[in-house]
Image 1 (cartoon, each protein chain N blue to C red):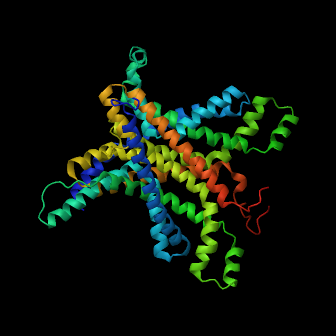
Image 2 (image 1 turned 90 degrees about the horizontal axis):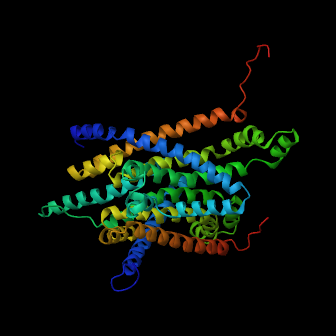
Image 3 (image 1 turned 60 degrees about the vertical axis):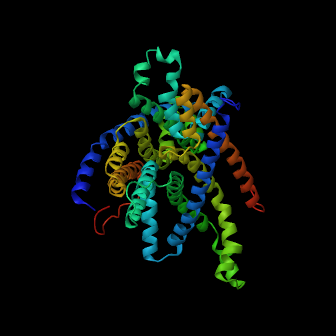
Length: 237
Length: 230
């Protein structure tokens, strides 16, 4: 491998890291809000809301993200009403279109994870809380959500990592994040393997860090699963 | 749109066929890699296990699009270098279809490794011990006992991988292969109706995935005959 080329490529690719991280962070945050709404609709017990949420999840999980990105970025402009609306300055911009597509997609996947977490809360716990006289909101806040979050965290972590990978698709609508820069470097130099190794290492580093962060959060949230600290012999207990 | 002489229906159907072929090819290639990886992780030596661990960790940590770029451009530069040895000059294009299928296969192989590994571990020891006690050779054991039982446990996981592969196959459009997505891009470009074409593409993807998940459910039922449900 040519060292100076590798070094220059690394510097070029590093410039794409902030955009990759920003796209991930904003779409995961916005997606979480949407996912909460959709999971709530599915668990509401109201048939219409339930069916709507089901249809949303079916469509967004059943079609490729790239189709969703194209539909929003290229497709929406076909309609006159969209082009003359106040949203057009945003929907004309690949950055906002990419964020919208990523967030909508993430909301579909994350809503199922949240729903699974909420459904995993044992019925007895909720009954006990009701028996203590807690209101529905209080039960949700004190009992259901804390238990559901612990259950859903591993799956949610996987979803965040797949969002990091999904941001690479935004390079196709001209965003210069890590993969966009990598594609440009490969097209300029035809040294696919070197560029691939460096860009891949950057993604691995990001995902490894995220995995560690998620594991630390899980550790923090589940003190009851940790091994008890041993009390040294001779110390007063 | 439509199936008339000036319609795009035929083109879209052809694109859908290409998409399914890429997905099937990638899934099949991934199945080979997955079985190899699972074998390495379960029964391989230290080196084989290390290689398989590295393979799954790396491939699950990097975006599929990057892998497609690697195979497409990397394949071209390898072909170019080989061509150079024989006196050819200039750029040799690597077939996009092959590059895409291999890329999809390599990424799905990493997922399938974990599926097969989990399925093998779900087989109860007693079944394998009983087969040994009957005097079956390792190969016969694999064919008669381990493979059918593992497949039963693997099918739900394989179904998930298949759905992922089907969606991943859409990325092959960046290499210029005229799959369903590329065909709709072409249609969108020449008619100026991108919304209609991408909605149609999305609907066809939904159709393919719905039909295949129906087929998978039937296969699951078939391979779970004789399993008592609580």
